[in-house]
Length: 102
Image (cartoon, rainbow, N blue to C red; front, side, top):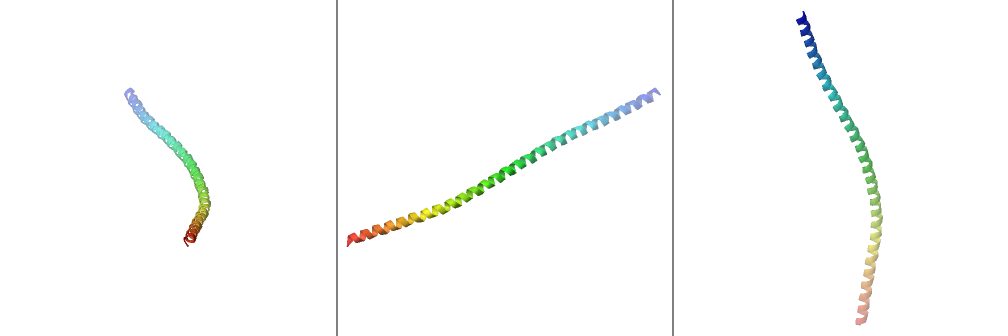
């Protein structure tokens, strides 16, 4: 009877060891899941920050484009005035040249 009791105790100890190993594996898995969840939360926060920065950059690009459009109009006006002055000067010079020839 003593032998049966020892065998029963040994079987129970092996069974408890297997259960303990499974519990250890489960706790490691839970820890890994918690770490993964924390990484996902951090990634989501980073994504939100990046989206905010992209929106900010998009707004800045829109403002720069508006300023470029305004500057483009000014440059066109200056360019036309320049060529008008060059044309008038060339015509005046040619008129003066031909007037002095005759």
